[in-house]
Length: 91
Image (cartoon, rainbow, N blue to C red; front, side):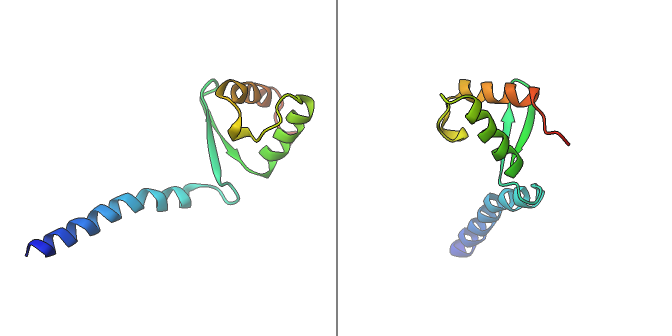
């Protein structure tokens, strides 16, 4: 009986740990693999092809930012989001 109880507890714990992952995968829009929270503007940004294109445009205008977005310091990421809010997509 003790082994049966341990097995049931392990199954319940495993389900509890996996369920949020399945839910977050379903909730994200198609083509979006990363959502980033902008603390200054208190909103989320979906990192998709449009955002990658905007970041590359920004990096071209700011050559001191030579790394991927995630590798930048928090301060540099904040600078990008400030610029991004000032330069929304044209559609």
